[in-house]
Image (cartoon, rainbow, N blue to C red; front, side):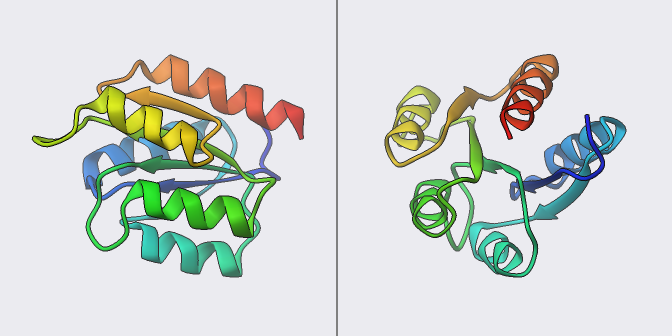
Length: 127
C-alpha cells in the first residue's frame, strides 16, 4: 500500500487490534490504535487519518455513536465497521446500523482478513 497513508484501528479487543495492527503495518501503512471511541476521537483531532476500522460494541463510546461523530467532523474519512454482535443485537443489525450512520463498509466478525485488506486497499486507492 503506501506508508504515507494512515489507518486507525478502534477495538476494545486487544488481540484483534494487535492482529489488525500487525497486518496493516505489513501492508506498509502507518497504523494507529485505540481501545474505544473516546480515545479514537481524541486521536483524530491530533493526527490526519485516511481510513478507520471500528468495532461496533465497545465501552465508553460505541461504534454507532463514534461513527456518527466522525462522519460529521471528518466527512472524507473512510470508515469500515466491524461487529460480532452481542446478546441483545446481532451482528447483521449492527453492521446495517453502521452503514446507516455513515460507515462506508461493514463486515461481521469473524471476518476473512483478506477481505478487509482488499477493502482498505480499495478505499485508499480512491484518495
